[in-house]
Image (cartoon, rainbow, N blue to C red):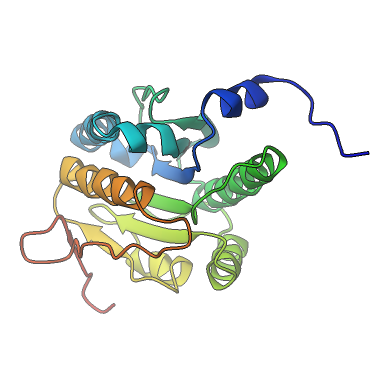
Amino acid sequence: MAEQIPFGAATVEFVNNPEPRVPFVLLLDTSGSMQGPPIEALNSGLMQCRDELLADALAAKRVELAVVTFGGSVNVVTEFTTAEQFSPQSLIADGDTPMGGAILKGIEMLAQRKQTYKGHGIAYYRPWIFLITDGAPTDQWHEAARRIKDGELKKAFLFFSVGVDDADQGVLKQLSSQREPLKLKGLRFRDLFQWVSSSLTRTSHSRSDEQVKLENPATPAGWAEIPAGN
């Protein structure tokens, strides 16, 4: 006898929206050093990302976002939800920078979500994990680096990292060994999230086995730059 999937919120969700999913995990530094203009710009960027995804009917149904913050502790702010249902919370900056724990939490959430998709017969694109930080980890991060490298090699996800202000680019380089870490120009979070929403929208319109070519954000007019020495 075939395994019976229990009827619940996930079942209703996928019955109402059986579209393939583009899973996207945001790992956001909300430590004390992000207070003031940086956290305000980050909050504004999140709202813009939501609005731009909603402007595309297919992306609104296919892109699923999860938000994990790390400021003093690791917090799951938003479980996986489609852009249609995504309502960004206003983030507050405080505490130290448990980046390693946040990365491991994001990878764990992603693995669980993929199992949920499989259990309900929902196709999915290669997931994204997107890290934004302005500092250095205050916890152990080497296991996170190993898990990122393993996940990238197995094509389990794509990992991106963006440093803000005085972020430790040396650590980001070791975390993102398969993809060059970037540095945000000033506080151009709105431009960053415009690039994110555009990239996710294009992905949602592609085939699930297709690798979408992303625009280079590190052009002279782009929102990012390659840190010196990388």
